[in-house]
Length: 397
Image (cartoon, rainbow, N blue to C red; front, side, top):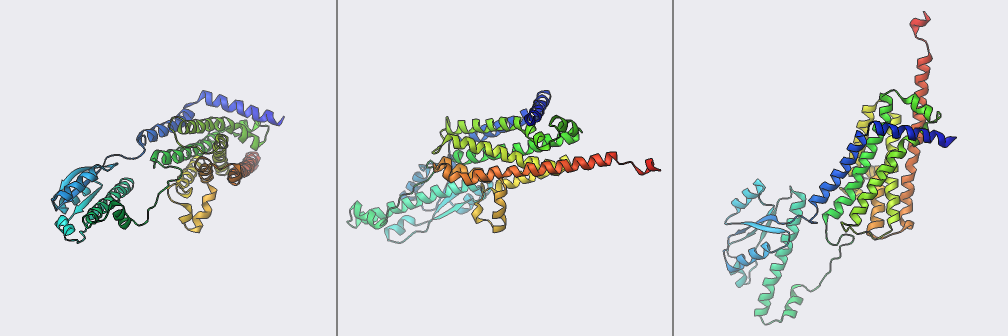
């Protein structure tokens, strides 16, 4: 008998979707557009051919060689060689270049006389990604050029190549990039942004479909189909959207970990459970907001604010551990935070259920919210019923 109420609400919601499918179609197109957009712009893995320049005040064989080596560095391209600092600064201010090397006059003569020339690297950090990549490539090139010059000096003093390298770099180190050894920005952006966008759309759509019952004044009809049980009404109403958005999330993961080649070291089934619980937890938050706040536009606004804050407080753009403790405590109120941590454990480190179960439990704990929301909805409907039954003062007179 209990499941009959859920089934009746489920059939009712499927009919409403069939009669008015545009909102579900728009939400789905939003997810597809986001996926295609980021897959297109990050298809190369990293930005290529970032525009840089060289200010060559020396004009020697060595400075021209350095310029050619910078141009051969992967990821950057020398688009101009200037004779003075002013021209390069103006080009950077116009946005024509992201960084430039300044080779001072007399560099070659200083090296011949065993003096240390002073190179300057200017980077436009207003463009964070382009500036960081340009700095890394040019700084690495500068270190290699310095080592090459030192090796030539040691060779002329009679040292072998092995002895020269021991003096230039006494300690060798090997950098191991865990989880994303290709430093592929598509791997980083898509595996975090796509689930976050889906969670945002799920939350907004959940708030909308419940608020629509208020706007169309169909709450009583909705509750009659559920047998007067608010929790069954919410369950039957959310089931179609749970299945649909979980399917979208799984399809996105299947494409990313399949044809796109993103690494998945752990279990695919754990990733399925993680995606399902993300959609479920986002719906629980949407049910709570829509049931507690009787004004649908205000509920949509609060849902939008909550979703916007999740991008920051989930640790996507800035590490949560580096935030003040006040904000750190709020990070656990966002489902996407638990999803990210589970994703790192499963996809990157290959951990199993033993590492993921606390955050799975945290996602399941959001089930309390629709229960509280159902109680608020029952109280609001009882208040409305009493107000409609109570006679007005003019009727009493």
